[in-house]
Structures are given as structure tokens and as C-alpha cells.
Length: 205
Image (cartoon, rainbow, N blue to C red; front, side):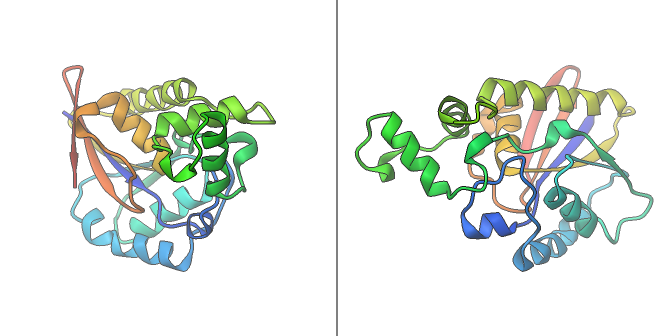
């Protein structure tokens, strides 16, 4: 059985300011750095030697901070684990996107918008003035491909750590283990995705 430990990055400056970041780089906040340090207590109990991240600094920094006390670690980049690309909505307040969704859906009060990863991705793709945002289907295909790329490189019974971002991790878990019902993944939250004989099983750690 192969096990993929999935971890969201620590709080970024954009997280703190409630700003859309997606494919845009945003450094860890002071709280985010501390969250990654605190995560060592769990990370140190997990047996792995390969760590995958996307190319975003908040993912890479979280991985290196959380794994600082681990030995014989190899860090690998796979851009398939980058956050969903939100196109022209990046660097704008989250509230602006919610207001855009409400207006486009004829919802009078933005507070009544039922936000899901699918709604956010598809709305960004639909209303993006720059026409470069990923829709849900595109983001899901990308992260599914990245997961299988990692599995193909794993030896039998290997365990690896993947440090990624909130929405793409939510999409990943929704695609592979929908019954886990994961939403709104907190910073430095860790899950385990087990792969055995062509089947996936998930758990929260």
C-alpha cells in the first residue's frame, strides 16, 4: 500500500488579508511560519523520505519548515500541486469574487452564496476578464495527473508527503475519496490518502 500524506501550507499573507492568491506567490505570515513549526510534532511521527510541493513559495517554505527535523529528505517539485489558477481574480479580495458570483447568479445577498470549490473554480473561469482561470474540470484533471505521477514513482509500501494548497487539495480529496467529505481545509491540516490495488482510501490525521 502506498500512502500520500497531504498537507496544506501555513497561513500566507494573502490568507491573512482575505485576498485571492491562486497561482500568485504570497509569503507565509508569522502565524503561518509558526503553524508549520507546530506541524513538526505530527510530521516527525510520519515515516517518509520524499516530499512533493508545487512551485509556490508558501508550499515550499511550509514543507521545509515542517520537515526541518527530518533526516534524509528529498524535496521534489510538481506543478500539478499548484493552487487553482484564479486568473484575473488573483490579488483581489475574496469578497469581490463572492459578490461577482452573487451578481452572476441573481442572488441579492452575497452572504447567501453557498461557496464550494467547484463553484469558485467555475465562477472564476466564467467571469475572469483575462480568460485564463482554470475551471473545476481542468484543475481536477491536473491534480489527478500529479497524484498518479507520484504513485508511479513510489516503491511498494512507500509513504510520501505532499504539501499543497487549500482548494486544489479539496478538489484532490473530492476526486479520490469523496466520502471523506472534506471542505474548507485549514492551514497545515494533514490527511492521508492510501492507494492499494487500484483503490483509494482517505483519513484525517
